[in-house]
Each structure stands twice: as C-alpha cells, then as structure tokens.
Image 1: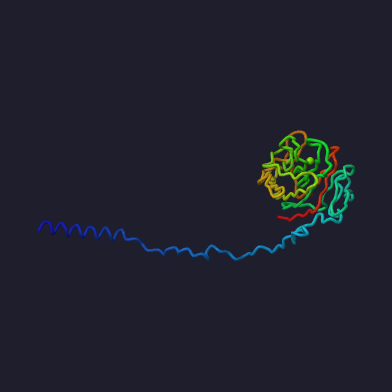
Image 2: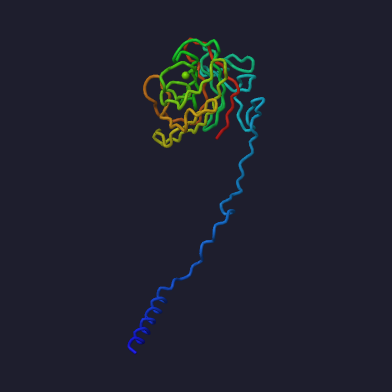
Length: 258
Ligand code: MG
C-alpha cells in the first residue's frame, strides 16, 4: 500500500514538472533550398573580349594606342603633343623628348600594355632598356631589360620601383614582346593627407604574377623614401629614362576603368 502511494506521488510530481517545462512553440526556420542563395540581378554587363588573332582591345576599354598615333598622349614636360616615334604599328621612346602621359586621368583601372626591348640592346643593370609606367603619375612600375641582366632586386622589372622585390623574373629575351597586365586600386585619403586606404597593385608579366595585390607605400623616389602625397585621379605616364641604351618600343595599350 505504501509503495502504491509513493508511486502515485512520483507520477504526479513528474507530470507537473513536465508541464512546467513545456516549451512555447515558435515557427521553425524554413529549410534551405538551392534557390535561396542564387541571385539573378544585377547581371554583369556584357564585355566583348578582344580578338586573339588581331590582339584588339575589349569592347569597353579606353584605347590608348592601337598602332596608329599618339593622340591619347601628351608631352609631360610642356603639355604639347607626345613626340615619341610612331612606326610600323608601334612607338619608340624618344629620349630627347622626355616623358609622355595620357591626356585623360584615371582612378582605379586594369591596364594592358606591351613593350619590347630591342634585340641590339646594350648596357647593364639600370642602364639597359629602362623605362617605367607611372600609375596616376605617382607610382612607378619598373620596365627594364632584366633578361640575364642583374640589378638591385627592388628595382627590377615589375617592381614598384624601390619598394618591393617582384615574385619572379618573367622576362622574354630582347627582340620579343613582353605583356604587362596591371590591376591598380587608387588610394583613399584622410583629410590630413595620409592614406585612409593605400593604393594597391597587381602586376602580371607574360601571364606570370610579379606583384600580388601589393600595398604601395607612397610615391616613387629615386633618392630617399616614398612620400605620401594627397592626389585625385591622374594620368598614366611613360618614362623616358636618361640611360644611354637603345630605346624600347610599346604597342597595344588599353585600359578598363574599375
Ligand atoms: Mg624606370
């Protein structure tokens, strides 16, 4: 008899406790279906790639040189016409005429540019096919004949000059064409002129990555450290270097704004 009473009391206590703990029911999250993570808009704009056979620019590119003339360029020194030598669908640096730069200014971009060291090149280290591409007129991506030609490592082809050693030496030999594809993100500045977001750059030469999203520290300086200088959009400048070696050639230059 005693055990029956004890069992009944235990059953009652369990029932009371269970009902006290009974949870309120809320709607359960819907199970994931594939379509829930598939977005259809906005669709990327259609860009027609350049033709492989004719090496033409993509449909949305700003063509900076297509073999005909230097109308997209101006002399950096006096703002007059760019006076480098156009011939045979290419142009050659004229060291007597100084640097040239695009008439248009740019922010972030993807740049395609081809360059050739002449077969008869002479000189060594920095005095051998030296030129360069100044991004926004401030930051030089070095051009140099580094084919079996050693120089200081942070000044070789594909460096942000004197700031970084490229990940590879991807030079083709003199007489052959080199291809640069450069992806550049312009900086954002604080009010006081310091970088809020540094400029960054990726450089690919002949399909080989030389710089992988490198953080640029400041302006390119021959003597001394990089400086931080507040600026907006800027032109692309090509360097007429003062070394006595034979001038290099350029062709097929286009840019896509990013
Ligand atoms: Mg240079």
